Length: 240
Image 1 (spheres, rainbow, N blue to C red):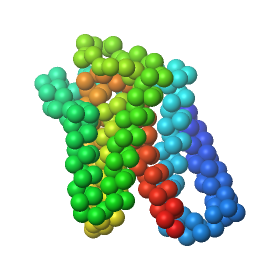
Image 2: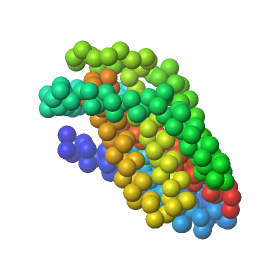
Image 3: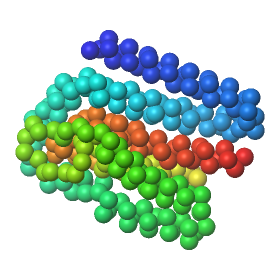
């Protein structure tokens, strides 16, 4: 298993390096004015490519049935080591990833940003929130992965893949971090820490409650973070 993991990491590294090289070659030949902005956002672009490649790789394992044993083992391990008495806490956490919580929060954030004349940031938040809902619905409609049935759990709509709660929180939280980074750079690290903690807790809550497989939340987190990051890069390049 360790050797397979090392092999997968090596493949992902090679894929990301190739994609970055191809993107750089395209920009140099077709959009030379993007070279300087891309150099400044090199780490962000690399991270976006890593998120995309990771989501594709894990999705392939899911569709190929290769992730089943690992998913089951991890979920059983979590169930055995997290006391049932804490379920109420994880139920509260998972509510923060629900549409009825995130949609009003995203709408309020967008309105505040527009009112304070931060239109680009408002666009990033609104577009991230809306696109996350669309992506969740489309993927769940297309993919028909059964939810875990390892113990009695609450019933949820649609496919288990991906975790809608995790994807939506990752998209919104990442968008907010980007906005904070642009408006108040000094608070960037604090916002990033809060965002990562929120995404992690929501993802774990879905596993503790037994309504998603680990790969569901992993792919969801990758897709959710990918969308606002990619959007911000595109918007910045467009404005150059």
